[in-house]
Image 1 (cartoon, rainbow, N blue to C red):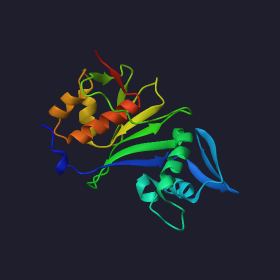
Image 2: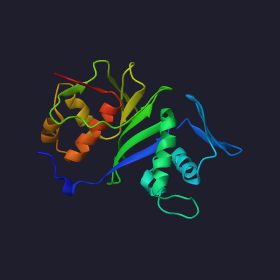
Image 3: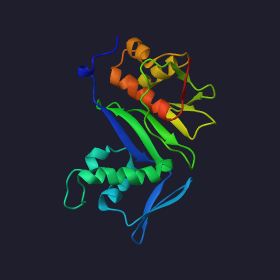
Image 4: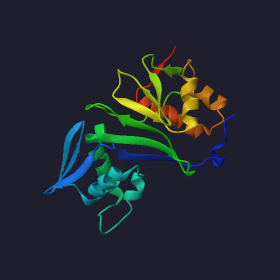
Length: 206
């Protein structure tokens, strides 16, 4: 049986820029340059500029960047503004699932194509899913890399919890069944599935 949610570390949904993306200024325009092209954010609000600066350094929790602050102009509407900008440059944005247990990220979804778009998917509890047939799994240093030539994202598996979920997807299985089988908090199992599905790594089965 899975662990109870009450005893589980909190999930964190983090955002960062691809490591090969460089952020700089041209006058009042914020310029993001990298192998996937150049993007320009004209006259960005201070909260947007700060978010992108922080994301260039590594994964951040956006909620931590939008606390009221007279210096940055952040506030309740800043979150929406930042998300709008990130949506327009999603091909350079890495999405990472982490736990509040200081053991590092669980997995990351990394864009690989100019038109890459990512959003979390909530799978139906009783809908059987499995890995997309074209998916391959390789090892790069201490990271498992899940990818498909048909997709514009790859998933990097950093911790065994995510690999447990991936291994079950070798056969058709429902999210409910995975929650029952895996020794993980239900919320974590479903979040891992949501990231995999959002990256296109799963398909409906039966």
